[in-house]
Length: 201
Image (cartoon, rainbow, N blue to C red; front, side, top):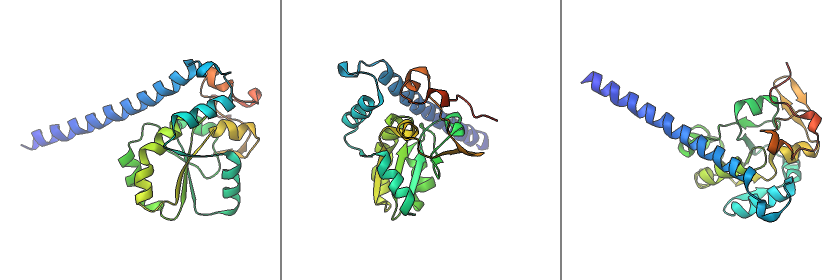
């Protein structure tokens, strides 16, 4: 009986890992599709990508980098989540950001952070806003139910933030470098000499 129970528990654990992997795979496929889509005959640059994110994620509330910078300067009731992979986060991130995996389940995110959002504005960002829009859409209802004032996606993501020469940090302190995601998406960055696939040691 105990062996059967152990097998059932192990099977459930495996199922969760498979589903989490599939979430991550789907998010990666969406980002890849953005890279090969013709962007409706528009030029591939950050403004057109931002416009497409606004069109494709109309159910999500978006904010610009300037608005976030102003909030960071004057407010404490702010939670910022970085929806990128660990290697991206290690190169640099927005000060105060907490990294979460793009494949995080909505319920696991709410279980871990749901009691911290009451009375706060919650902001998600990634490289350009695709992965963070997906995450914001996944958890925004649950966050609102738990008392979050607003749930926002940073449109343009860390790429827009970096292009505007705003502050970034890593484990060693301030840095001017940013992870480009890959060569294609990295072409959206204005400062090509400040891209790194891994942090400088």
